[in-house]
Length: 362
Image 1: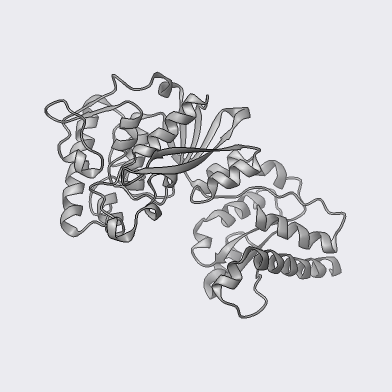
Image 2: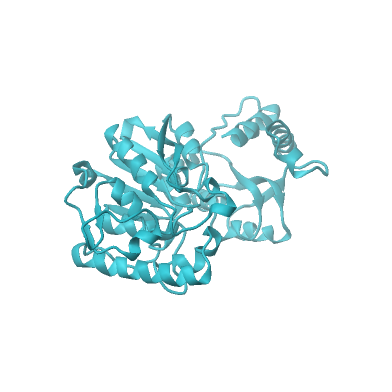
């Protein structure tokens, strides 16, 4: 939203009479809560939840009261950035706090959830989240299993007899661009375990525990399908949502574009402007700016993009729907100088002004 407001400033220097609508954009990752809450007149709530290491952390989520919708990022309660490098160990990190966030929103009347699940520190198959929602994960003696992937090693029984009843009325829209299955060579343990602190021996064990967990779940919960794409997202949190709740996995940017009703604004626009920190070949593979561009092209609208920097391969964005793009840096500076909010806003407004002077001339 700050970038959009700076763009509007640049436009108004050339076209004072222009109507420039600034709309929120996110892809389900970090920043989604703030973008959607600000852009949709939502309210931010802060609560104390159980963090990935089992210690209290402060988590933020948004509520759109008109639609009883909660906007959440699992990383607020179980993010890898909350765990110092020397303490990363997915055998013990938990998603329990994610369940506490959901429970708090349910108590506030929310029944629709938009959930970003990127950036996790966990590999517990979502068991911690489910325990917080009332699911019983028990060992052979009928005792609750401990937090983390380690708990799945001794898991013998899964029961929904104590689940909070309101969960049955809740619908979850999971922003997920990961296609990994739960287990195997491309499963969550093998692909994402190392960055969470797992060594090869741990990866092998966790993969076996998750497979056993999925088989156990299948006995009572018929939706359990560890082969489904996305079940390996966030250390198996995707599997937990799909198996134990009324949930769908969707492209993060697609979900945001639909929720913010961006098409209603684009169809009447003369020009669509988008962008991100750096445009490169990965942008062209379907990241947020390309989602905007594809939507704009459905209405035959021209699209330009502004970014902090571009790479040579960013030219792929031109064939993906962005008609022209422009970096906003105006001199050689350090990354810290470029990221300074005041400098970034001024660079953005100045770059936009010059582009629109050309548009006015033409």
